[in-house]
Image (cartoon, rainbow, N blue to C red; front, side, top):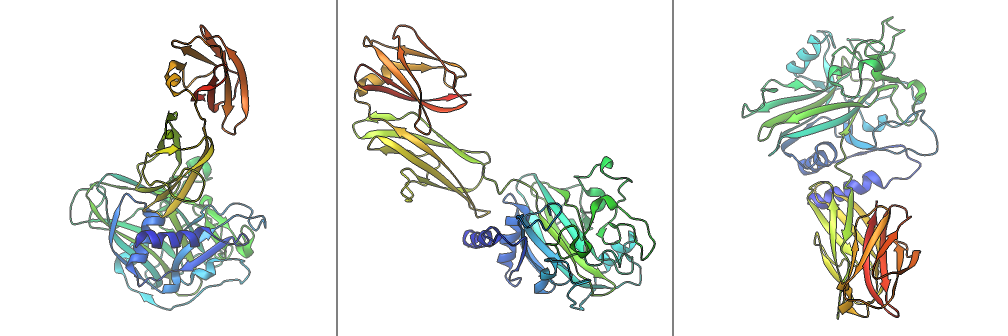
Length: 471
């Protein structure tokens, strides 16, 4: 089920109309499978296992988002995140610009009672003791990994409370709590939840980026703020903040202010079991939405695929070629090989062989599906197959070094006929033609880096074809 579902999510997230900059989409929070697949795909990656997924809050307050740059120049700068999870204290639709509705939001007026979170925010002076919490959006799950695993997250917090309502009596806040359950394996965590996403945990901001030191606080409107004219208060952690009142910085975003993309990390120890609780909550009253955009910060969704191939082995049936996929990471993937550009999958092997029955140029395509993330990628190369008329002569020629930089040595065994060679690039262009001295043949190369074919002829026939690499 996960493959089909993630492919649907992938299609929704990436096949978007070009005119849209920020798109949001709710998903069925009653289905723990949908949430589980999305969390793996967009937040955590495939190296972990999660269970007991639970969402608390209004169904319209959580969903997916995609952000796409275009030529309309609605933003002075890039938003910073292209896709991921969106959690809000109101409705995800209010995160979408243009930001021209003043103080906008959705009120559910649902009081949220959690003494641990209330005390945590109070201890950091993020809220006053008299403040009640409302309209929480809470996502929880247990997580394990069979190996030590490093996770990284990019996060943007935005709010309509900027800049008029920056006060500990109103401040909306976001927390990412982690605790260890069942066993005592990880010395960095215990059963008491620990917020790993405080302002002091931001990894991509150095002291040189800020006019004043970062003060370690929970993420909220009160703790990341500019100077407030309403309350005559100085800014706090201001280097993390972008002002967007009336959409002046990015009219594609509906919030009056939001943070820069902040990078956070989480280290998981092998076989330890953790509980994660992500919560965004409204302080004091349900009015004025806030939202948090979050995604995994990694290249897991970039398969970085390539393939190479050996020199053809010619026989009576044709030319047999061995192909070798080159995948940078050890992923759970499915391979789809098309050897003759007819749209038909010829092999699902990781490193197949294929026999070409006729000479010619063939476009070979390898397409790979990441079975966990539901992400496709592909790469294609032209393969040149020549008909060698004298197969028994093929092994009488040796070409070295290969790979090479600027020359080739060509040696002949038991050969007396005069020969010539052509060097062909991958597009089929003849880059070099030269007669060969069969007793002493060193060919000087003045070609660009790349892959080429060397074709050697006797007085009438092609006797040898070999692929070389110039680097």
